[in-house]
Image (cartoon, rainbow, N blue to C red):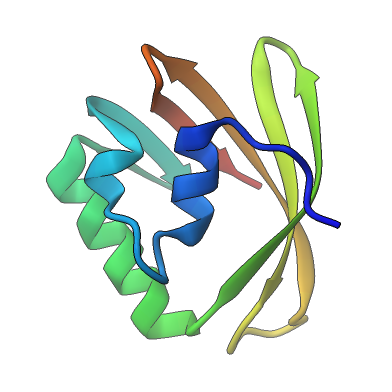
Length: 105
């Protein structure tokens, strides 16, 4: 059973299927993943497209909890990478119904 996620976070996890990242992220949002930092929607869209092409991954959110002022979603990520499938934490900060900060660890 999937956890109950706030709408922008649910849209993020569905973005590889139908939703637009522009419906999830604030224009000034930041994403940190794999030692890189992407700021702004164009950079976040490029990061997402690159990751999808490279890993061909899917997400299955498993758990959600509040931690250190963030919403942390543990997701089962399956794709073309060593150790797949793997549980990965996605830590979100939200503002005005949109994601303003995301860190994948």
